[in-house]
Image (cartoon, rainbow, N blue to C red; front, top):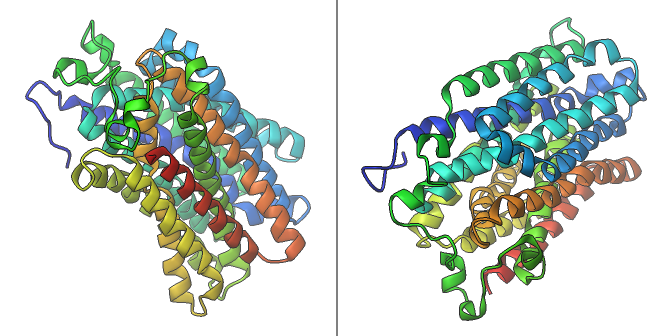
Length: 425
């Protein structure tokens, strides 16, 4: 459990953390449920995995578009209004699955709209959590929030398992599940959560109150990395774009999202069609792999705080290396138990650097630049999640196997490791 650093650090931040995590989880369910029910979706159309991949890609495309326009809206409304607003829109849009289920173009449009809703929320969610938590706890808290996507993916897989024996169309289940969950979270969030500046007028984050504000200074990563004395904290988004740190962060985030969304497609399909696991067992195993990210993401923040004295990049390097090794070994696993262990470990390790990455994205720029920098990196990261499922589905279709996909994802993990290593230097 996170412990307050000072007496004036409000315990209310833990409720803010939980509420934001639930909001992100609600979007994750909306994103993954169609993929988890992919075998039923494919039967309604061409019986090819391309249908499911296209729907996943459409949602991620919206997730790319959303953050690009979220900065001004979030600044105007604040997280307390912005997050419930887009959850309500998500609920309304998801209900359109029922009347539009026979039109694939209409389904693609609905999925894009779902992604936009998630993209419009994510900057508010990250900003809200980082405002309420001190520097030493921010990596853990952000990791917990981002890890809730794994919980959402796992919940979607569990729903798919329960649906397998029920006489309920996939589109009806998707519409009602997504809408009810989104509306419930929107209600709780809007009633109970308060924006930090409304709770503490004159302050934008908790570090200012406890007199440990590191804004405008070099963060732990920057201070302790080689050549740190040459690093100048950029002021303005144009200045940030001219730094090599930006490109390394963009590359890391792009691959991180590619791994998260790519594996979310590949794992259930591979277990269902290329192993001896039953459909229900495969879905449960995929769900367990997704749920472990909820522990792995905050664990990365904890390792950053305890073992690496606040440094972010060692955790990012460590997670990328584990991903590369485990995903590369999938093709050599000849027993189902070993295969399942590699799945779970490989997917969990992709989330190990999630929390510290998003915390670092707000720490390497001036405070006024942080919201726009975070939104830009979010959009770039989501581009990876947009194209990865479609590319992997195409490779699996051409090669009649999902095994090559794991090799490609392992190579991407190595490139991600190189990006994290560059950030360190």
